[in-house]
Each structure stands twice: as structure tokens, then as C-alpha cells.
Length: 509
Ligand SMILES: Cc1cc2nc3c(=O)[nH]c(=O)nc-3n(C[C@H](O)[C@H](O)[C@H](O)COP(=O)(O)OP(=O)(O)OC[C@H]3O[C@@H](n4cnc5c(N)ncnc54)[C@H](O)[C@@H]3O)c2cc1C
Ligand code: SF4
Image 1: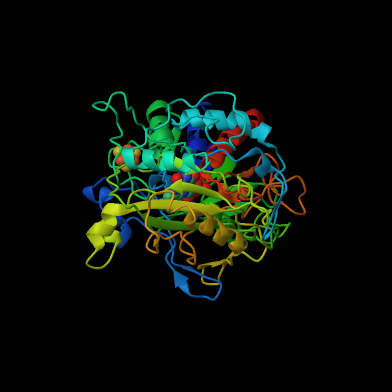
Image 2: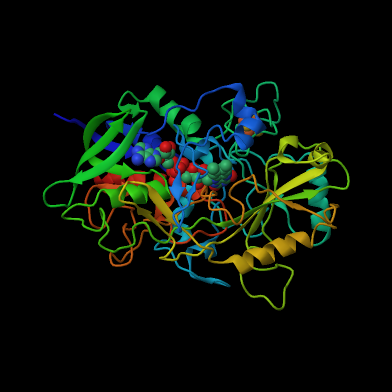
């Protein structure tokens, strides 16, 4: 006899963790299978050397790149997935992002649903994940039905100065939407202490809105009908003899095989690993991989074109919590008019503070004291050649080439043109150690698109409710379902979609 549940969820990150909470609340028996363990709570959580120098919490890979060279991806397999270390910037996609957008590098295709379909779920997601911000401050904010649950996070003096300087040039800086459990009115009781080791670090104070803190632990405490199994790596999904339903979820649990079955199976292992698991589960009925009659599974991988850029302020920058400011004036080009360029460029936001260990040489301390860090993102476009495949020996290959690099360089140039306005020195630094920046495939943190949703089973693997077209009880709710990547951070959209799909699963059951 194998253990049967109403719902089995695979992976506990933004998609899976949110699903666990939402479906746990329905009273159904829900099992969450997570390949990782709990991320240890220890002093090293907040150590720049441990996190950036030693990559203490990176435990995915190695994967192979297109040429077969191994690399260590920026992946974190723990309860809470990559939200354990994320920067907690929780953006809505813009209305236009859901439609066709022409970019310099090609076309960003339309989603099968519009922004209006997502709006109620974005609102629910912002409230569940306790987001701070002020709708409308960002000039490109889409419409909203309810305010954020918390006010924007205040900027420290050097960043407020930056804000004022940018505004003086006609730009429109705005407060980044942040998922941290901060109560600025009551610092003595606020869980978040607004520290300088947030973006990229696990939160030792458990004050970051990651899926463990916000969804998984509350669900385990509240609902007797939910179960979490850690160190439970799903290695194969098997179907019934017709090939139409998942009948068995096969797990490798620290070397032992376990099997589970469920009325509904929800896959949320991250865009790279979900695609890999589907491909690895090929069978007689699904020769190209499970649910892959369209051939799109594993294809159209998008990573964003990201750069971590460090400017050097002419006066010291003693900011601790730096992620309080964003600039979207260049999202669809230059809002101040740019005659010879008609294509979108992307988003700019502050990056978390880097400490002295990020710099080399005799001036390292001085550089760190003056550093002002930025993260800039350009939309990546879906290409069937950018894909995840599985080698005969089980290793994952991530074949990826830039799709929109000219626009990204232009966005960097725009940013460079603001250095003087921002009272920064002319020279700047591209932070290579902050993997995820340009020219490194290690930065798979914004991965999406590998199992896209759509109305046509010939060109998509999932239907509009994220159920596989080819299978009647398998859903995929991590960032795999994206049709295009927009240029904003992906996680709020993953959370909103998980809440949307949870309702669909509840209705069907
Ligand atoms: C340093 C960093 C900073 C980031 N900052 C931001 C930010 O500020 N804003 C933002 O929107 N996004 C940010 N991101 C991206 C964000 O973390 C991801 O978008 C988000 O976590 C993706 O959610 P997911 O559910 O798709 O997958 P994940 O969070 O990756 O979760 C997948 C889970 O599945 C598990 N798993 C994988 N394979 C299996 C298997 N075979 N069996 C069982 N379990 C499995 C993994 O262990 C993992 O827990 C950041 C990421 C990183 C690394
Ligand atoms: S800033 Fe707040 S949420 Fe982030 S790591 Fe520090 S205490 Fe945690």
C-alpha cells in the first residue's frame, strides 16, 4: 500500500509553499515533499564571507552549460526554496507585460490571461506576504484594488539624497515593494531590525517574508491535515496505464525509495528542476517527457538580463537597509523622451549593501564605505534554444544565450549617465561575485518559462489553470508557467498565481 493524499505538492518555494498554506486551509490532506532540509539558523546566516565568499547555503548543481562545462548555480534547496535568501522585492507585472511587447531583441509574447485576471490575486499575495509600499508612486504601477498592508519603508539619509537628486532631474523614484516584517513605528518589537545582510542572505531573525515563515510554518501549526517531508527528492512521476493521470510520486529520501499517490499532484520544484523532472519521467505514453506532446517542456528558459552595479558616492554611504528605492523611468524606454530608441530597457532598483569583503586591494575599506549598490534588469525573451535538458547520466544541462543584450547595455549606459546627478564618482564596478549579474550563467535566480501555460496544447504544456494539457491531475505552479519574463522580479507573480490555481484545485475537488 502506498500512502495516499488528497494533494501532493513537490517543492516548498514561493509556488509550493504558498500552495501548501492555501490548500491546507481547505481541510484536505496535503503532503509537501521538499528535497532540502531546514536551512540552519546560525550566525553564518548573516556573514558576508560565508554567504558570498564560501557560498555556504548554495546546494544545487552542478549543472552543465551549453558546451558541457559544469557550473554551480545560484540555487538553494531548503524548506522555503530560494525565498530563504531572496531580496524580498515583490513587484506586480505591469499591465502591458501581459500583452505582446516588441523589444530590441525580439517579441515578448502575450500571456493567455490579462492583468485584470491577476489583480485580485496580486492583492491577496501582497497581503499574505506582508508587503510594504505605496501603489501609484511608481509611475508604471498597474491599477490596484487595495492598498499595501504596510506603509513604504523609509530611506536612510544617503538614499533619500539619491531620491531627491534623481527627482531633480525629472525622474520618478519610488519606494520598492518589500516583503519584510518591519514595524518602523515600534523598533523594539519589530521582528525586522532593518540590517545590512538581507538581500541574498537568510534572515536569522525570521523576519523576511519567505515561504517558510509566511506559509509553511503557520500551516503546520494551524492545520492538522498537512504534512511536510524534508529530504524528500522526487525522482519520477508515473502515470496510470492510460498515461492520462499521475498514479505514483517516487521519492528518494536519503537513499531510501518512498512512493506516494494523490488525487492531485502539484509540481513546484523551480523552473529548471520542474522541467527536468518532467523530462526524466518520460514513458511509453509520454516518450518526449511527461506532458510534453507540445515539445515545449524545458524550452523558452528565461533568466532576465541582470547586472549588479556598484557606484561610489562622493560622500560616505553608511546606509544599512538599502533596498528602499526603485526607478522604472526606463522600463519602456526613457520616460523623458529618447528620440532614437523605441524599445523597452528595464528596471533599476537598489541592491543590498555589500561589505568590505566584496572589495579587493588596499582601498577596500574606503570603497565599501562609499559604495552605492544597484540591480538592473532587462527583459529576457523566450527562445526555444534556451532550454533545460537531462543527460543520460541524469545531470542537468542548461543551454542559454542572451536574447536582449543590446537593450541591457543601453540601460547600463542610462544608469551611467546618472552617476554625476547621483553625486557618485565616474568610475563604477560590476559586482562579479554577486552571481546573477551579466555574463554568468550561475545567476539562474530569476529562472522561468520552461513549462509555459496557454490555450493551445500545440504550443503550451499547461492550460490557463496551470494543469498539464496532457494529464488530468498534474499542475505546475512555480515560475515555469511564465510566457514572458517582464523586467520585474518574478516572485509576487508566482505567489499570486499559486493562490489563483489553489482556488481552481479546490473548486475541482
Ligand atoms: C539571491 C536571490 C535574490 C532574489 N531576490 C528576489 C527578489 O528580491 N524578488 C523576487 O521576486 N525574486 C527574487 N529572487 C528569485 C526568487 O527567489 C524566486 O523567483 C522564487 O523563489 C521562485 O519560486 P519557485 O517556487 O518557482 O521556486 P523555488 O523557490 O526555487 O523553490 C523550488 C523548491 O523545490 C525544491 N525542489 C527542487 N527539485 C525538487 C525535487 N525533485 N523534489 C522535491 N523538491 C524539489 C527546491 O529545494 C526548492 O525548495 C531571488 C533569488 C535569489 C537566489
Ligand atoms: S533586514 Fe530585516 S528581514 Fe532582512 S535580514 Fe535583516 S532583519 Fe531579516
